[in-house]
Length: 539
Image 1 (spheres, rainbow, N blue to C red):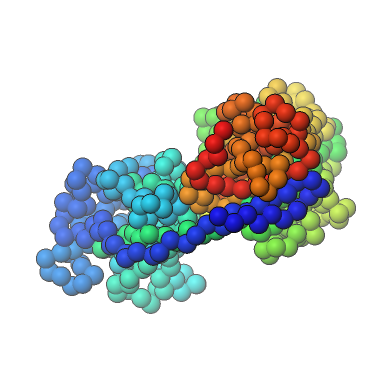
Image 2: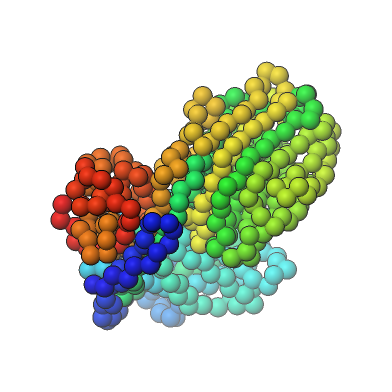
C-alpha cells in the first residue's frame, strides 16, 4: 500500500490509502420469481406477496399474462386504488407490494457488503401497465414506481425508480443498478412501491421475472476528508429517504395566535451541505387539537396532523450555496404535506439567522440571513386553528436517495412572544441538547443528532463502501499506526462513528489523536495523519 499525505488544516494532515482493484468475475443471475404458477404469489415458500403498508393497495393476483408469452407461466398482477382502496391499512395514499420480510432466503449480499462475496449489483424484471387503469396525466407517463428492500433495519431503502410512457402498454424490460450502500448489505426481500397525494383512480400493472445480478465488485480507492468541528448541533439526514431527524419542543404551547406581537421563531445555521444540496430543512408548527390521537412522532406533521404550518428550505443547484425557502400550510387533510404556499423566496446562503415573525395572528414576515425578507398572510379562519396547544418541530429529512447522509449544523433556536401558557425558548445548541427544552420523541434516530460541544474536535470522514477497513492515525506518515480508540483506552462510547449514506463519519476529540511516540498516555503530537486499513493496526 502507498501512503499519499496531503496537508489540509493547520497541523492536521490527511492520508488516503488507495486499494488495488480486484478482477471482475463472471456475473450470476439469481431468479427470485418467474411466477410460473399461482403459488409463487400466494404461497411463495411461506412468504406470499402482499402489502407492507399503505391505503391504496387492493390485492395481488397471479395472472396468465407472461412477458415471454409462455403458456406454462404467468405474472403477478398488482391492483391499487388511490388514495384509498377501502380495505384498511395505514400510512396514506401509497402501496408497498413485497414478498414479506424474508422473501429472499438466504438473503443476498448487496452492493456495499463484504467484497469477498458476489454482491447484488442490479435488479431486473418485466413490467406491463394495464390500459384499463383509470389514470389521466399531462406528463405522458405512468406513475413512477420505486424498487427496493427493507435492508438490514426494516427501513424503506429504494434502489432506484422507473417510469414508463403511457403509450407503452406492452411488456417492458427494466434493469436498475444497485449502488453501494450500507443500507442493503443484506437484501432479504424486494418491494415495488408508489406514493402519491395527487393521483386519484385505479392502477393495475403486472410484474414478471424478478432477477438480481450478482458479481464481484471492483474495490474503489477510498477518499477521506477532515474538517475542524464547530460547536453546535449537527443533524444528519436518514437513514431512509422519508425519515425525519428533528427536535420537538417539550413545551407544546408555542403558538403565535394570541401571543405578544411580534411573535418570532428563529434559528441559526452554521454549516450545511451543498453537494449534493440539502434537500429539506423544516420547521413545523402543528396544533395538537388537530392531531389524531394527540401523539407526537416523526410523521405527525404528515400522517396524523390535519393542520400544519411549515417553513421548508431546500438547496439550489448542486455545488451552489443558494437555497429556496417556502412557507405553506394545510388544514383538514391528513397523509399529506401542506398545500397552500404563502411565501417563496431564494437566498444566496443558508448560513446565519432565519426568523419567522408574526406581526398578528394573520400576517407576518420571513426574514433571511442576508436581511432580505418577504411578507405573508393567512386567512383568519385558518389562523384561528393554530392556537395552543401547538408543537414546534425543527429538523431535516433526505427525500431523494442521494441526499441521505446530508447534514446541517445549528447553534441556536429561539422563540419570543408565544401565547400563554407557553414559555419562550432560548436554546444554545453549542452546549448540547437540553432535554428540559427539547424532546427526542419525534426523530427517526437519536444517533443522527450529534451535539458538538468541544472546539478541539475534528470531523473525519471516509467514503463508503470501506470493505471492513478501520480508521488509523499516526504522528508521522511512517507510523506508528494506531486506532483513535487506542489513544482513548478503547472506550467504545468515546466518540461518534457511523456510516450514513455514502460516508462513514467520525467526530474525534483531541484525546483520540496520536501521541509523539505512539503510546496511549504520552504527549500529543503536533501532527496527525489518517488512513483506513485492513487488518486493523497492532496495538
